[in-house]
Amino acid sequence: MTGPCDPFPDSDRAAVYRVIGSRRDTRHFAGGEVPEDVLARLLGAAHHAPSVGLMQPWRFVRVVDPAVRESIREIVEAERVRTAEALGDRGEEFARLKVEGISECAEVIVVALGTGRDAHVFGRRTMPQMDLASVACAIQNMWLAARAEGYGMGWVSMFDPAELGRLLGIPDGAEPIAVLCLGPVDAFYERPMLVETGWAVERPLGELCSVDTWRL
Image 1: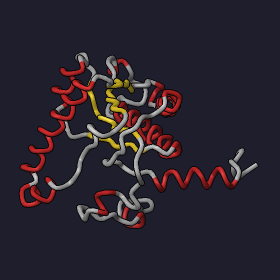
Image 2: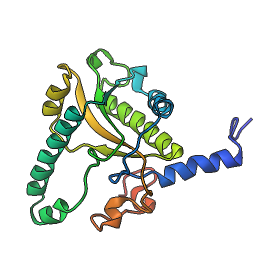
Image 3: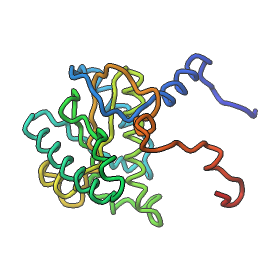
């Protein structure tokens, strides 16, 4: 037999493509809360991500202490200033962008690469960065699940990993890679926020694909 095996019904497939197309990196939140059962489902979706060699390198730190949340925001703000300086002519334009929603979102979750990753050789001998790729898959799962549940999520990567690691007591050998802002929103962006603000322009898929050899 050739062709699809056990495809989902048309309505289910449409829902999958809809949530992929409407997922947005969210910066504007409306306060509120994420119910515990919903949060459990979102973390469960992340944990169902594929990982190279089934190493499951993702670790999640839920931040509930307001003082710790504020310290994270300060770490991000310091890096935002340094990024603006590094951007030169676009620094002032960048400084006007909203790059995080740490103070306004319902939940802050820090995602890190766990310890002991060097023991996993399967799939990583020539590409050790596949541990990071695996965690990125977990975050994407969580992002899509959040959108399906009606909540916004934003991935903040603007921080000094060592400084954030010290704040959260992350051990040597582990590394924070994401501060996730999660919670209710008043509306989802029609297009990616960086497109809406004029910071960047999306490239069409056709410019990013070729056949048999690199023609990009």
